Image (cartoon, rainbow, N blue to C red; front, side):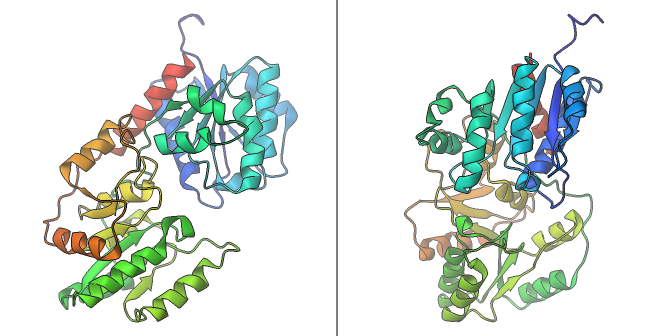
Length: 365
């Protein structure tokens, strides 16, 4: 095959994977999907704090037609100027710069400050949700870039394993269900943007109805200066839920995680921006086959670019609650959904990643 017949190659900027990061995992799996069938056309450059290697970067850029990077990656909190420097070198070598932006308004202002020149150097910007497009468009400095940004469908960041693992917490939740308690689940990191306090209000509303809820947060608190854990604990006490709320902490394996998922009657999420196509925690939860009750999207076209996600909504696997709904309304939806039989969706994550890879491959060519 001549060089003219080959599809353009790409150089993917990856983090070290420490600490773990959902967007970092997405970057790696997207690259693997591209490499299927084109194993020699897509390479990796690992970006680490305080370890910028000019000569290695220059050579790697020489072997590629485009640089691809996802933002924000947790491991780059102390290395954001590394990707920016690589983009600048790519421009010197006349390479394309392709950026996949997973969020904007929720980022710390200093991260947005560093990312703005990255976006300005980008030939193509992919956004994972129309909601992120709206957030970017509202930026006074780089908002004009939203008009030419493309959309990419995001796959689930977790796949249902072949089997599940037992754990002390799983046994505790199973016993609670056997005693007639309603096990309400919430998966993912606990931080203000996911309104964990509003989920506590749902548990309180269920308790007032005599449903004997046991609310389990499957995840851990994000350590930050906002004091979210203290606020959370104070609210638990104020609502009289001290015996009704469990926080699992970090769960390392998918087998243990889905073992916990299987003990849940329903999941609940109260999202200020409504459900968006980038909510990976919802896509993970829905694979348990239990109903996921969540705030309706703010934008009518939120899932137009993502037909597989739309199919989950249309099937009823995800139950939408009006945006103006109160905790009592969520409680009603949870109680109604509780009686639904377990229906595990046919969700092949490999196929979802191939969809994303094809969108990216179209811009590479």
